Image 1: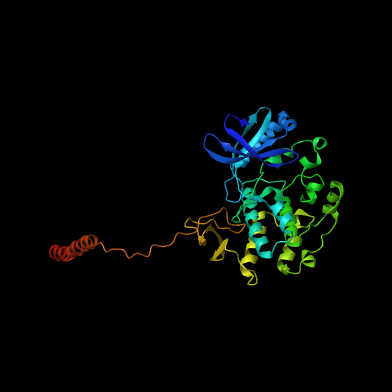
Image 2: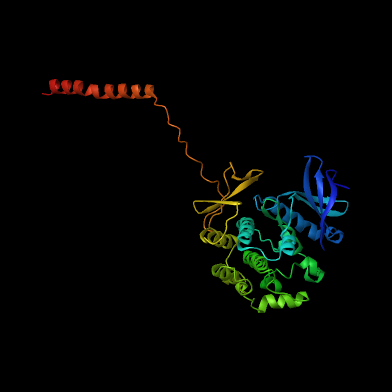
Length: 360
């Protein structure tokens, strides 16, 4: 099957209640891409199609190493589709199911990247609305990328009576305000990141129930068990950060993913008990990714993106190294300078002579 006379669908990567995801070949650019094809009933809804178009455009403007790039979107054969960067590897939820409980080091390394990507979107004015490990792809070298920006926001435009449980969101991960039917904010994404942190470190979710309504009530009313009570290896400071992130009131959490990520990065770098991975090199108190090679991990020769505090806008290239090669002396310039100096000051005696002889 070929969509839009350009994207040849090759194999199914995943299925869900709202879409099918395929690995495909871009016949024009001859590269592998991921194509998400939405359900037919969604594709025929004119208001949703317009909303989807707006959100896909906004998502396509996001360019960050921890966000899956949106290449294209459209409608073909009665189906809305969105074309994204193909990321080899698996989603974080699959890794959680396989591994159970993650080490503190690996959790921080992955979640710092997630916060970087989501924080970048927050600065661009976008709220994800459906942060969950299913929407985080992890490549074999440890790079994490957040996907599905825009799609969740478009689905949020569907009226409540039309929403199914799957379309509405992920009850295990959504925030108390989302559970109450209120519009999400960046703090809602932060809450969802906190749920993932909790799950990775303890091997279990903070809230679990048999139906979505009970889960929604627990998110709104029940306090989670402190993660350190389940896993004593969790540092006390990290335990406090997670409980703050899981606060019921948005104002009691960190405002954006940038703030949460900055705290996690500071903890990762300052705790001497943590065994640092080769994925991060630490210079000047900032984390820089490295490129994995067959001979081991070596620093990237390209300027590395560095994570900055919330009050420092954007991601900046690491400062370039100063050129320590000695510079040659330009003797010609020095000679011209000396001649100019001599000419200027050589006229002083002449003008003094003229002044003394012409003075009455």
